[in-house]
Image (cartoon, rainbow, N blue to C red; front, top):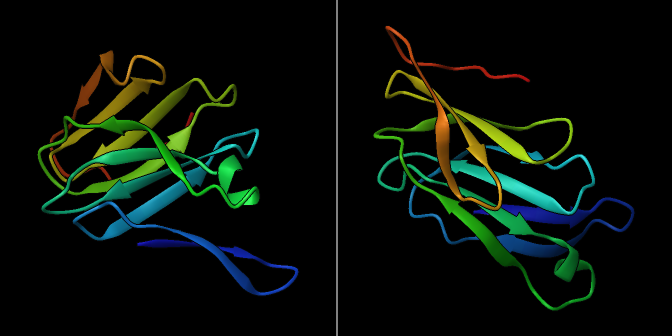
Length: 120
């Protein structure tokens, strides 16, 4: 579970709680509308949440659920334009995902060991 807090008041705004594994990383999109969460076993998914409804008390909405890693997802990052995500995993890969398509396009990078860091 990830919690969203309003720092000015210290009030809990909402929780993002549909992962079955531990959330290991998160990232806000450049426009702050979306939050991506990366989870470990047994989930091994990245979820992208629209957090604008949180500000209007309408709740949160999952806009993408990205599956494809075979193990823990260690990091998630948005591209500067917010159209792509990159994830890294203990399955020895980094993947680039195109939002709107909801899948790993053609960019899957194989490594010889676990991948712990990503950046655009």
